[in-house]
Length: 128
Image (cartoon, rainbow, N blue to C red):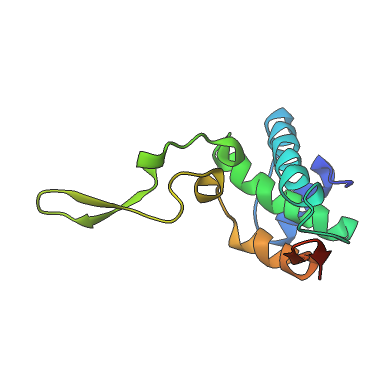
């Protein structure tokens, strides 16, 4: 992966977003790169991701990380994974897999769409 702050500034500017070429942006880019590396590039579920796609995914992740530092590394507890289902005498309903990390991991539909073509499906000992 060759994502750089200069590359991110250009990528963001092309989309009409403004990203400063400063230490805060550089730190967000590093944190985003860690997320992409951990979640996709080091994963057995994904293979053959081109460097340009990895870089663009990192830039997309960095936008969220810059807006909310720690976005990709938040800690959740099962009781935080719920939706309000009744307003009068408040009632909450647990959603998804409330007991595991997968249910608490933030998701970017843009990044998932970029990575979807490179997902390998594992069936037992076989990968398709």
